[in-house]
Length: 256
Image (tube, rainbow, N blue to C red; front, top):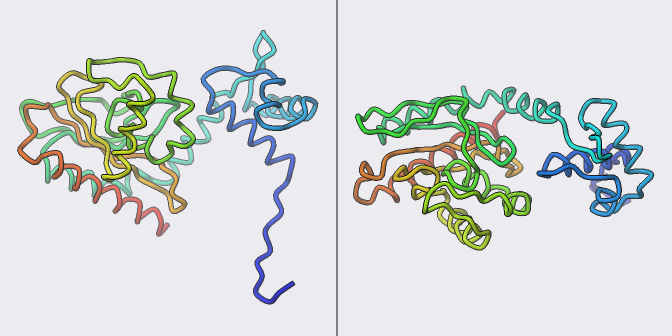
């Protein structure tokens, strides 16, 4: 072995295959059978069955009456606990306050929950005409600023999951994968997402992803306002502000 060569750590084969199954089921909108999973993951049916039995015993997977399998909420709880352990609310609080001072509009901190975002913190608008969502409220990923920012951070993985779930909420909702592809490409290029009233009529929202050091999106910052409150050059200004704030939060996460 050459001097200075890096020895790659060994990965336990059984563990990695079990995690592949769990990730597949967690990302799926439907339950799957042994045959379907084995084909998708390149595993033998017997191996897939044994791993599913272990995941079922541990409570991460449940077997349905039609003999298909689905991920349980235990997987979701582990993911949520990870977000909570990051202290994302505390870390992002200065940036939420900054965005509130600079815009006077409603400010949100959101994380992904299946194909939706859930708002885990907010600062209310200071203006008489305002948009409003409660902490704990949800919205579809494909039609709000925070959701589209999270999509853009991991579109390669999330695209197939969401392409059949593009439900219309307003006349502006993007309901085809071609339209969403173009929107996500624009989001990536400019560094922030922009919702033109796609979830609620005449309510605009902006979003920028918060990323872990490896580039994974862990949440997003958002600004929401009625369209009549958008000032001249407001899209560019708010977009720049929220991009800056999200980068600051991401940098703080990288230092933990």
